[in-house]
Image (tube, rainbow, N blue to C red; front, side, top):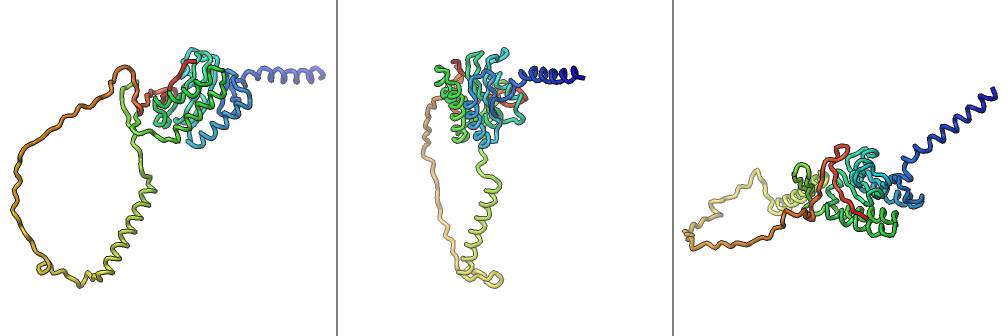
Length: 274
């Protein structure tokens, strides 16, 4: 009986020890999966708080990932696949510090594609890159998140379109300028103004539609004049419009390059070596 009492606690202790490695896949803080252990706990908490506010503002799923082993993937592919492991929706952003490929990356999904054009992604990477040379990893991550949140606040840029690099299709953004509620309010206001105008007009002239008849024979006249138009000449002006070359891999300011990524999500993004 004594042996059994000793064996049971030992088995429980062993099971707890073997369970420790599994916890490595848990987030250091909400939204932060620091597999490369680049952040201390206070830094992870700060990043998590920043992401939490950003996520509440957008309704997207947003994560920060770090890794020392990208398992043969590029930093963007790693971001796509890891996002797919944790995300339940179609819209979001993943910020990646990849110590294996020595890259930082921004990967966006779904609705976020509209906000983060190729040009804006480069600006986000610029902000993060500024800190990577001094190994200020937490500052780099927060700088990328701040820049992404700034661009979200700027809204979808004018002329934005998604370019699917797999199919070659273009999907231009069409802004819904009025919600149904706004349309209803507009109609009610218009009806109110129109009704008031009609009421004032009727009251002013005291028109009684069942009795009053306008004598158009007495109160109207028509003058007809003869007029002839003669064609003299025609002037045509030609103007040369300079167009951007489609070659060379250049990117217009409104373009977001996308493809179908992990989980069937429409995804885009960019990366930068450090």
